[in-house]
Amino acid sequence: MRLLLRANAHRQTDDAILEVAASPDTPRRERWQWQVRLLIDGQTASDTPPPAAHRIAAALPGGMSVEVAADPLTVAPTVEVLDPGSSPTVARTEGELVVLIAAGGRVLAEDRHLLAHGDALVLAGDEPLDVSVHRTDGSDATIAVVRLAPVTDNALTWVP
Figure 1 (cartoon, rainbow, N blue to C red):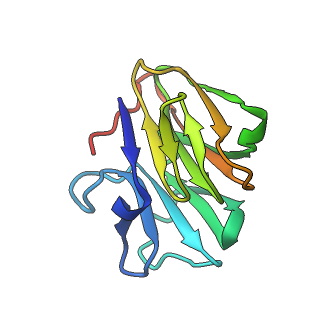
Figure 2 (cartoon, rainbow, N blue to C red):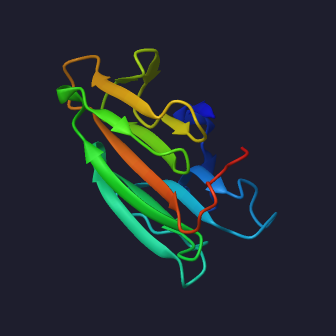
């Protein structure tokens, strides 16, 4: 699965935080597994995930940060921020779900998806496993790479 999510399509929570993706995507529909959110200027969420959730965050340009929370019995999350100026390739396994989030400028993913500030590309399943990213302008754009790896042998899936 390959899904392009524009910044203006992210779900706004009650406390003005932007939820990029979550499983389940509809709150309280199924058992909570993980969420990826964008926070502005040190915001904190009032509708926090369960207390046992594993939480990690990374700072992005413009006073924004990406926060990932996951059920440690189901998902092992990681976040890294890359400089797309060096044209890195993001490699993933078939079982991983990866969310690429552009920040501070424009980034081209897979040589065909133009991501502006706050846009995200969600990748799951068997294609693509390797994604090239690079900056398209002279900005200080970065790309947050959120990896959600399954703790068990089951691949992570997401139905938005």
